[in-house]
Image (cartoon, rainbow, N blue to C red; front, top):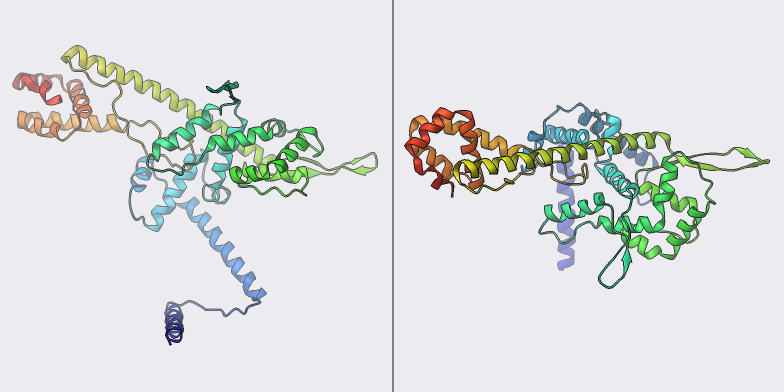
Length: 396
C-alpha cells in the first residue's frame, strides 16, 4: 500500500512539474530509451550556442577595478551582470591581456591557468639535494612551488584538505618531465623513441598507481610512450602537432609542441614573472616605509610602534593567477589617511571628538593616523598636543 501511494505521489509531482515548465514557455521533448539522434544533435548545438553567448557577454562586460572585484567577493549574491564583470576582471588580471571571447573560452572557467601554473612549477630549476635528520636525501621543490603550498595553508587555515602542489611537482620531476619540456619548449621535435621518452613511459607504467593517486592520470600498460607523454602535456596546458616527412623511403612522424600554445604560454610566464618582481619591489618599499614610520614614532613620541602594520588582503583572484598569494596592498595606509583627514576636521569640535574617533580604531591605526595627521596639518596637530598633552595615552 505504501509503495503504491509513493508511486502515485511521484507521478503527481512529475505532472505538476511538467505543467509548470509548459506554463513558463518551455518545450518538453520526449526521449525513448535509445535516444533521438536528431534531438541529441540539437541539444549539442544549443549547448555550444549558450557557451558562445557566455564568452561574448564576458568579453563585453563593463570593466571594473580591483577594489570593486574584492568587495564583490564578500557578497552573498551578485547580479548576473556583476558576475560577468568579475569574471572579466579575473581573466584580465590572470593573463594580463585584453579579454576576448576566444580567451574566455580558452580560460575554461579558470582551468587553463591551473595547468600553466603547474607547467611553470616543473620548468623552474630545482634546488640542490638535501638530507633529513635520518640521512635520507630528497630534492626540495622550487620556491615558487613551496610558496604556493605555504600561502594556501595560511589563507585556508581551518582547511585540512589542501592541494599538495609540492607532491605533484615531485612526481613530475621524478618522471623526468622537466628535461623533456625544456627541449620541447625550445622547439625540438621528437619521434617518440628517444631514450628519455621511453624512460618516462616505463616509469609511468611501473608506478601507475602512484601517478593515478597524485596526478589523477590513468596510465594503460599497452599505450605508447608518445600517448603517455601527451597525457602529461595536456595536464600542463600543452598540445602537440606532427608532421610525417619521407625519410629513406619511409614516413616518420615527428612531434613538437603546438606553436600557438608555446607563444601564448611564454608570454604569460613572462607576465607572471614581471608581476612577481613588482610585488617584491612593492613589499620592500612597504617594509622601508613601515620601518621609517616606527622610527619616527619612537623618536618623536617614545611610542613603540610596530614596524610592520597589518596588511589587508586585496582579494586577488585566488584562481591561481599569482600562485593564490594575497598581494600586498595600500589599503591600510589609505584607511589611515582617511581617518587622519577626519581628525583634522574634528579638532575644531574638541579633544573629546578626536578621542572618540581614535577609540574606534586599532592600536596600529591610531598610531598611523596621528603620524599622518601631523604631516597633513602641523598647526592643528600642535593645537591638539597643547589641548591634550596626554594624547599618547590614547594610543595604548
